[in-house]
Image (cartoon, rainbow, N blue to C red; front, top):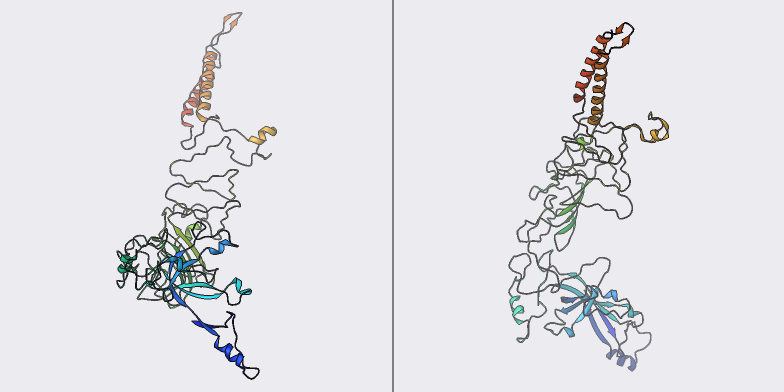
Length: 484
């Protein structure tokens, strides 16, 4: 790609038009002084890049200094070939700003000079721009080819040995382990990782891939027996339905190499799958389904669990299918100020192999027709006050007076209440024993035993039976503690 720019002997741009009058000697002299400058796109090797304000070449004193972020210093492969003095090399700015793809040092980019801001006043003023990293190695990780812009280095160059090393064809291929070269830096922090792989393409796919094993696939369900994937059903010939896969972090057990890989929800560090009709073979972090399949009441949440990674259960005809699967080794949902809300049209199921905790700084509210709690070992409730039944503020709870209506009826401590009852039984038993042998003085002398003695004896036996039953009146499953 190129164009020509014509200038006169004063450096001003000249736009030739057809003659409007007979040509004079002055016109001939003018034409002889015209200078034609060819403007073209040229490949260039990246020598340096400004990514933050701490870069030594960052100038905070100029207007809009943040515009320097992304600026690169380049050695053009033809115009600057073999120029090792960086002071004589040019700087280029990104051609576009909305979509940023900053190159690494030693990658090859395309540079072209175009108009700039000062072109408003000086029409032939230009700025060098860069765009498009050349696909030297076919790698998504990096495509650096060090010293390509120094084909004939100075024998006394400090980089002579490194330059000679990279002259070997294919040396430095990021897809081959052990082929990294010696002490080559692609930036201040970037480290080469030969295990980073591209994702396998399919017909019609649009993919975006980062340098470190993250990707976005705008794909579909495809029937490809040669290279099958996890989300397509090879038994169907239905029209391809869309799928969107966002992946961060590839399988860390992959060997080094450049072969293509296919996304897997069980091996990626984290991924989001947006499907329409596809089944994703997701391995669940918990297989405890007891509550989800609990038979009490009319629980239906467990029905969805029979096929949790397919959306056929939503609509078998396909018109309303669509689901989102989010999977990772850890998930954190955080809302800094406003609330977090989960709405489930077909129920909400939560399951874990370990503990489930709920913390609320104010109130924990549950509104449902019925609650089923199935604790296989024990159920503990710790609170300064516990109310069972209707609201403690209700006047219909059977209480007497305002205070009693607020608190309802207190729970009796079983063992202490039985101790009190046992003591009362002992007192009554002693009284009945006394009554059976009671003698009253009369004018005829002391009276005999009371005629009610047999009834007293029967009542004494009943008291003994009542006392004996106290020890068996405890609950084996419900326990409470004394206040305080």
